Image (cartoon, rainbow, N blue to C red; front, side, top):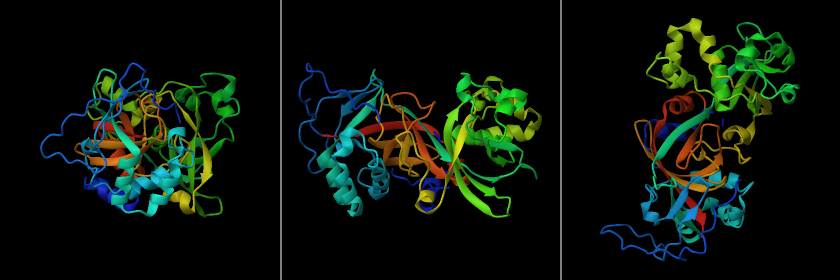
Length: 387
């Protein structure tokens, strides 16, 4: 689930010049051959040194199949700034998936190596597998998410009227808990949340964005006049189903643009229907406050793997297709970004379902939010798995 892009990453994304845990994959059944035939390379195909042996058999996941390929199939492999991905991989090594634990010593040692040295090590130690659906389709969908940066106040008033709540003490007493509309309108729901506000926001739409992203950074005006930068991280939900507000607008025939810029434009023209739109999504998210200073501020929130996310190098995946902590080669070409790069599968999300599906973490703040709000384009993925 659920951030300002560092300058270099943001600039690269905006101009479109980017080149860019669960059970491990089921071993091949005994009936499969130990190797598969290696076709002759097409004329002009790049053959990377060390990548000329027989290919291993395919591997299987509950929601995908993995087909072994040559490193030359990976778009942008010769051009990616691998040191950026190495920062994310070092984070994954804080909680490595078992198949990768033995590699973490090398990963840390190679953090200061050249790109050529890192590429040579990848070829020597990992095998790329093209991820496909179980019926053989390698094409999927890429979206993005980010960490909103929002002004807030520790106390309500002066326009700050929308609470960001901690988990209520009675959350476990009923499942599902109250819907979003009931939380906003029922006295008994509001009584259960009395005194549970972390901070207060000005805009209910910013609150909805925070809930959808699952995490955010707040610039909080304290009672003494100082301003604190804190993170509010996902702590739980009311167990109600998630419904897309964009889908609601489309189904109602109210807009043809269900991106966040399109949703905001519709709300600007129909402010009297704000509550109706927000209540179309009954899910409500509760948060916990975390300090945000020093090195913590250079990374995103902790993803489902339990490690901090790295802007431009972390993705959310369906864990039934890709185990947490897996290095993944991601390729996507569209109007928003051109990507061919190594990323780490470090998070998940309720809408991130399917074999070839990824949510790309763009960072924090307005620039990251603009990209995340618009990104929806084609995707191909390759898992990089230990030999």
